[in-house]
Length: 53
Image 1: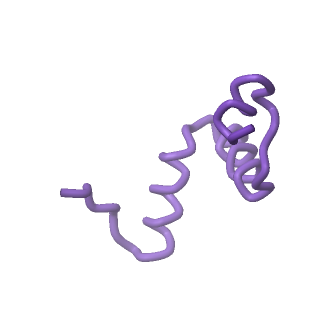
Image 2: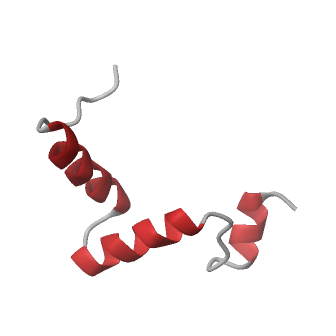
């Protein structure tokens, strides 16, 4: 069974514990996962993320 189908059947299933940690951190901050990535990028590289062209 592929990951998408498994997730649809059991949404709390996750094969990547790092993703669970990221979701937990985003929930604590009450922001989306993508916003968390943007904030981390901003802190690490001292600049905003650029949009893909």
